[in-house]
Amino acid sequence: MDTNLRWALITTVGSLAMIITYGLIAILA
Image 1 (tube, rainbow, N blue to C red):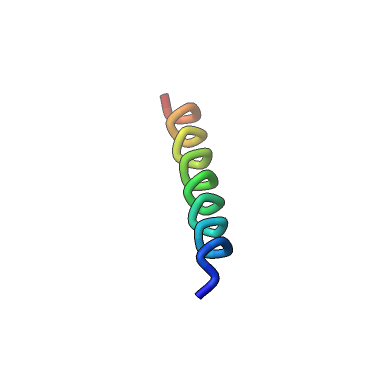
Image 2 (image 1 turned 45 degrees about the horizontal axis):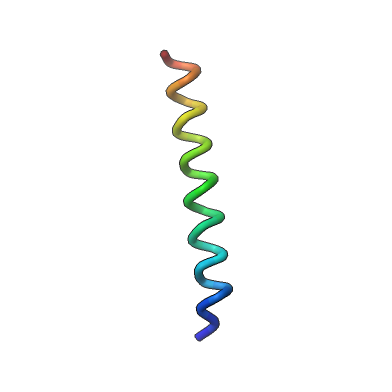
């Protein structure tokens, strides 16, 4: 029901996923 909390979680998880992905690419590249 709380859309603000839902979007906050989505954006946080999305940001962490992007950071981890770029981190792995930087390490492996």
